[in-house]
Length: 66
Image 1 (cartoon, rainbow, N blue to C red):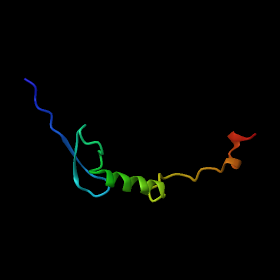
Image 2: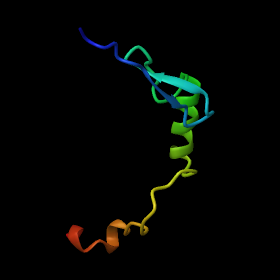
Image 3: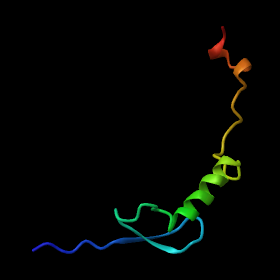
Image 4: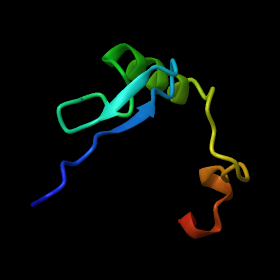
């Protein structure tokens, strides 16, 4: 006899609302398309950044010399 699989519940990264992590949720980990687009917009406008050094300009990169 198999045990029923419990759905995992996560918080929407944008609004904090509880979201079920199931294949039927097309926007996971977000609760809605709106929250997904808000997050994408934050990345596009550099509100979110990955920590690290600033990348080199194309002209200063020694690997791209022509």
